[in-house]
Length: 267
Image 1 (tube, helix red, strand yellow):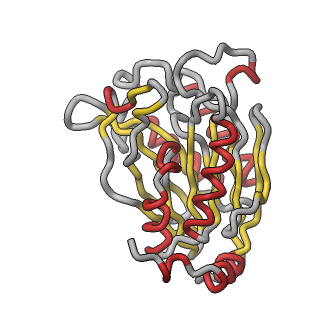
Image 2: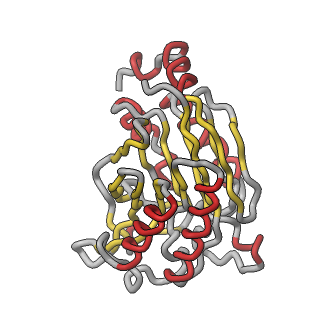
């Protein structure tokens, strides 16, 4: 287990339907994260374009303009940027993709578990990924997951089993009865399942910036960092904001000695 700590920043934004405008939000959030001394700036799922709008017309490959500009922002600020975008899939749908770039990192994760729940059918327009993805930031192994993935503990244990001490979870969590309670519970439970830090960055609640909520999963805010024994390290409210947290990696090692669920698991 790497020693020391990793400073992460969760940039809770309210993305719009305009990818170019959302790049301005990424640039601002990354600069603020860098000014706070963070190594990683995490942005929500659907940072490229808020849900509730056609995704096919905005999807771009990882060497397209939008991702290229994210790489430039990461290079300019000196942080690893993790942000949600959409890339074309082979079958005419898109992939719900996380780009992770900067500080020696270059990777992408396509969301594995698609949000076909609560009356929403993400799979109609989004093709699933199939491979768990981890990155390494300043020597720290970091797993990647996206939103609905939070309901599937196996992915988090797989990432932890591959060495991840931290799992970053960009999200655009749907509003509704009980959904905030489920968000808090699931982030903390996945931290316990994996005995890792889980840093989940949600879209800000659109009503907090004067927009209509709509019917798509557009975020509730409440971005959250949970520790490896499930405790809340810090959390934001509903509106846009930046959460900066120092993740003590020794706590992961201690948790895995005390509650060795990864060693004891049978399935």
